[in-house]
Amino acid sequence: MQHISKFENVTTIIWDWNGTLFDDTDICIHSINKLLAERELEHIDRQRYLEVFDFPVRDYYQRIGFDFDKEPFEIPAQKFIENYFTVVKQAKLHAGATRVLNHFQNAGLKQVVLSAAEQNKLLDLLSYFGISSFFEQVRGLDHDYATSKVELGQKMLANMAVEPENACLIGDTLHDYEVACSLRCKCILIANGHHPAEKLKTSGVPVLSKIDELCNFVIPA
Image (cartoon, rainbow, N blue to C red):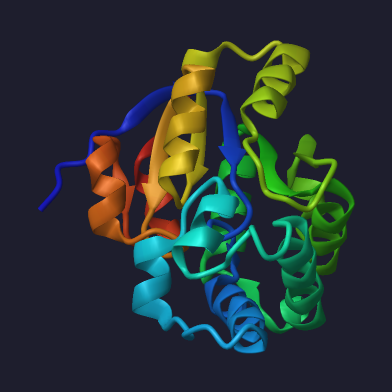
């Protein structure tokens, strides 16, 4: 069993959205399988998805059979977004997400969202699920292709005058760990999203099984 140390002197929580606060793994699988079916490629189940999904998503698409000599990446990437947003509001926040947001807010922590989702769509979903008021800032990308969010995070911390060592990024993929390393902040990963626990544990940072365990491991400054 992994020993998980508590993080002290935290002033700012940097939340990832997809897979961390928002339980959208199943609708991602549904949306990509529609594209695979259209191309007569093999469907993926949840186990296979957790094995192969990664950033950059272009590489993940190629891993499951897309051929970008036949069509540019942007075509299936845009169609995936269309498929995803036809069913996105059927998904829910992870159980316990609102309770944890309330806990950190009551503890006086700043909370922000840093996501590879497109900014306007991200804002719409935060509003739809009734959690916009928890966040001092929300930073998403200006396109739908889920590239890196490192630069966004660097600008956000600078604008907020937050010392990196007082921030903790909470995510569900190894890319979130890589972002945290680039930002030089703490990181906790939750194994209920787009990467399985075994993969997340290779990072060496704390890995929790569900979101409401966070309350025991982040100690406000």
